Amino acid sequence: MQISYHGHSVVKIKTGGTTILIDPFINGNSLTDLSVEEEKPNVILLTHAHNDHVGDTVELAKSNEAQVVAPVELANYLASLGVNAVGMNLGGSHEFDFGTVKLTKAFHSSSYSTSDGEVIYGGMPAGILFKAEGKTIYHAGDTGLFGDMAIIGERNNIDVAFLPIGDFFTMGPEDAAYAAELLKPKTVVPIHYDTFPPIKQDPEQFKAMVKNAEVNIMQVGGIIDL
Image (cartoon, rainbow, N blue to C red; front, side, top):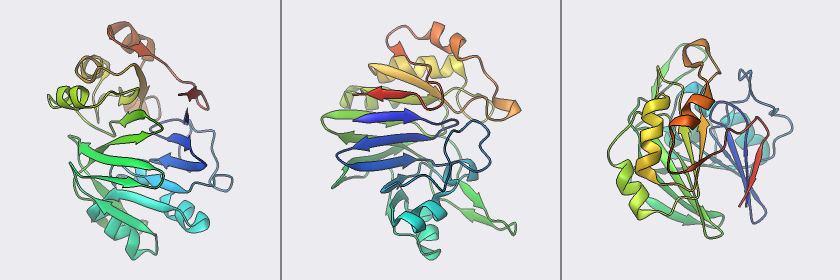
């Protein structure tokens, strides 16, 4: 399995011939190295409905006949736009042919703003547990710190956890470091920082606060081989 990071909360996973994009915010993301025209995902996983996470999902899904897995209300909205979307809900899991997806809770909000100003309710925000090839990836989405991260950590042998550190909208570095204590991943990767002025952070400060896991401050385009 190969995992790469592409700015903000964009993560790409390649496993068994399948390319998966998580929260593909590409256009408008000044930090990413991706282009919508060049990406060929088979699957798109979404944590919640905010525009900086749904991003270019509709165009990518339609042009590549990709399957989208998202919280059910968001999936229903995307399906109304002609996207092949599967709706799941918190606590639910499913074994797809590319791996197992389980949605965890996340403490945040979730709505999508259309180009004409309409605000679409996106259901509950989520984190994602993804399992394939005997490995477990946790993408926390946008969330504040919550105690049930300890349960997620106890019940899942997490190889890599992607945690937001930007503060303002999500956990900041201190809370994210405590989240790493609760989750007990082998490796933790900071995400959701530096994209916009309110979420500017120094990831080295976060790294210094994490005591029980390796911290990989991934550069855009950086790769982890599991």
